Structure formats: structure tokens, C-alpha cells
Length: 441
Image (cartoon, rainbow, N blue to C red; front, side, top):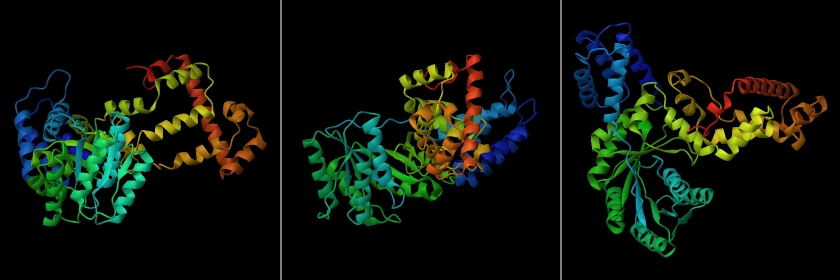
């Protein structure tokens, strides 16, 4: 995410490396490179120029504070201005009503349907609400079917009326149904087009008038850059939406949409989404995103994701086993399952400070754990609990059961033994209490 922009900005800051003071000359050179990087990231030139003018104004004449280099000071100035450009602080979602109605709008292919399900999942599991999904796309039967399948996956009811061709009637009946069934939030997945047209705008506006939503969220494909921003402006002029959702952030995102949309429409980005997993929905924090763009990492989000997945009681049990050097294959499998729930592995690595640009070309196979899980699943309960039981005949059976050869099994067992030895040494140093997710708040 934003890897090319990150590289360009890192290159721009090199002009200040080793300098003892920020001057007009070295600032001008750096600012020029920053503006170029933003334009290449598909940020509108006018926005890029205004942004770098503010950076220059802040930087000129700033004295370097003790123990801080000009490069570090410039990074802070740029981080602060990026944060301001993207809205300054996170924006809350209004999900209060009887029921609250959230209208989802956007072009076809932007990820509206998947986002609708992700939002329902988020409101159900993290906010304790009882959502109802509404299939209001009467033109694309696959959209109704997709929403129905996603609703089943997350355990959320979906209102579908395939016989009704008037989306206004569908949403009106859905809201009434939600009220009678004590559903406290309704999420409406509307129809999209390949491009902005009058018919689509009239339809979404009519739905808005009929149900008076608390929130209108505009969903935009972040990979489309400045085109996404132009589309957002067209929708906002007609709908006056309340917030933006950026999807597909796991793709080759140049960053133009994230950096430009709030400035252009004066509406906050409320959520960001990546991948197809229904758990991959995050509140948008401008400062955290600015840190990630600048390669400073995002430890806060990483810790939050870990705390969501790592149950504190289970963590205490695991820590006790680690202290006794009793970590086994069943424990390892449980940790893998929790790790996968945290999201895209490449994104997780990019949140570690200093790792952002380093993971760009890293080939992280999200299916790489499947072979390990297959080997563990091919073990008996006794073998999972006691790795020392694995003799050659047991290894052969595990290899056959998991579809692996004996060498792959031996390599995994060797790596597992090395990991246990490392944990044993860490135990002697008393490091576990400091490292276990959720143990130190």
C-alpha cells in the first residue's frame, strides 16, 4: 500500500540528510521532490502545490531542536500536513436510530456489496448491533445473490425481493421490516454503473428521500486515483454524502484518492478496506495513515488487531506453557489461526516501523500456512502434545496424510524445534511477559 509514494518521499528527504539546519535552498529542493511524488501518486497538481506550499512555510526558518536532524524535522512537518490533508482525526459513524439507516453508494465494481457485508459484520461483532442488509440493486441479479451469500457467512439477515423492480419500494419495506423485527440498523446496498449517469443519481437520490438515512457512505476503489476523486465530487454534489470508504487498499495503490478526496469534497474518510475477508475493515485514522505513508509504521493498529484476535485468557495459558517449555503443535496451530485473522500478512509487516518499503517486493504467500496446518492435522492428539514422539514411521504417516514428502516434514520439525529452543532462551531472560499480545496494556 502506497509503496511507490513512500519510496519517492524517502528519496526527497535524503536532500536534508547530514544538513545542520533547514534553509530555503535545501527545503526548496526537498519540497520540489515531494510535490513531484504526490503528482506521480495521482494527486491533483493544485492540491499537491498547496500542500507543499504549507510544508515549505512551516519548514523555512525552523531551527533544528536538540538531537533532531533537519530530515527528521521535515518528516514530522510532512506527517502533520498529511494528517491534516486527510481530515485530521478519525470520524465517527452515526448508527443510532429506530432503526438507523446507512445508504451505500458508488460505481459498479467499487466494492459496495462486499463493503456492505463487512460493515454489517463490524457493527454486529464490534458494536453489538443487530443489522439488516438490503439488496437494492434490481439490475444485477448476481448482486442480490452475492449479498445473500455474504449475509449467511456472517450470520446477518438479508432483505431480498427479487419480484420487486422498484428499489424505493424495496428499501421502504425493508426499513419497516427491520423495525418490526427489532433490527437497529439497516444497510442498503444500492445499484451502481460503470460511470456516473443521471439515471443512477436520480435513483439513489430517491432512495435517500424515501428513507432519510443517518449515513450515506460513498464507496470508492482506491486504485483508481484521481478518477475516484472526480467521481466522489459528482456523487457529493447530488447526494451530500456523510463519509467516504476506500476499498482495495491491498492493491497497487498510488495514494491519490486517500490524499485528495477529503480536500476535494470536504467529507471524512470513515473506513478503509482491503481484500475479500469480511473481517478486513478498519476505521480510518489520518495520523496513522500518514505514518504508514512515511514508512514510520503503525504499531497502534497492529497492537489493536492483535488484541482483537488473541484472547487474554488463552494468552495467559500460553504464557504459562511457554514458561514451562511446553509449547506444542496444537498451540502453534492456534497461533497460526489467530495470526491469519489479523489480515493480510504483507499489510501487517508494513505496520512495523522501518518495514514499509522493505516489504514492497516481498513475496508473502497467504496460503503458505496451509501445508503446515495439513501436517499438524495429520498428527494424532498425542503427537501434537508431544513432539518428541515423532519417529520415522510417524513422520512417514504424517507426510502421506498431508500430501507432503518426508523432507518437508523433517524441515518443518527442525524449524519447530529451533523455535522452541529460542522460546526456551527467551524464557530464561524473562521476555515473555513483555511480548505476549494483550498482556501489557
